[in-house]
Image (cartoon, rainbow, N blue to C red; front, side, top):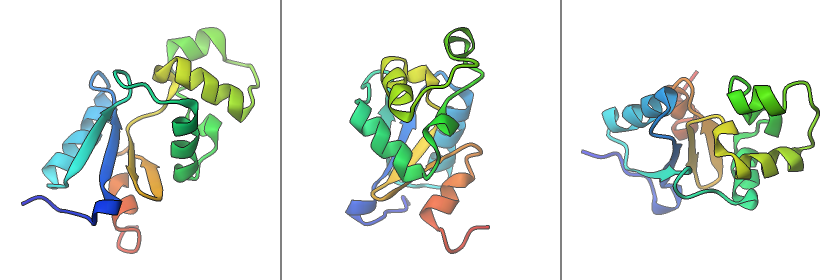
Length: 128
């Protein structure tokens, strides 16, 4: 039986099928029978506004959401200081730079690495 939230709290997972960590987040949602929507943000690219809103919901700084192990980061951005707006522009142009998976409900989002972080988002009062 799927665990259903109120419609306004629909779970969305921003997913890259080629990423092991992203697949682990997706498997966690499936294994725990949550009802969710998959957003493949490589096929359906996010706008700068969507990226900014999503990162804001995590409560993390924009730079904390950058994948610094990514080759593109190492070749083009390592050692450089970019503003939040510049990072968001770069993420929109190259989605590989965005850490994943990100799981979102209406007013909150979390970086689901490790996947158990999802429980902190869905049950904030019951998780450690």
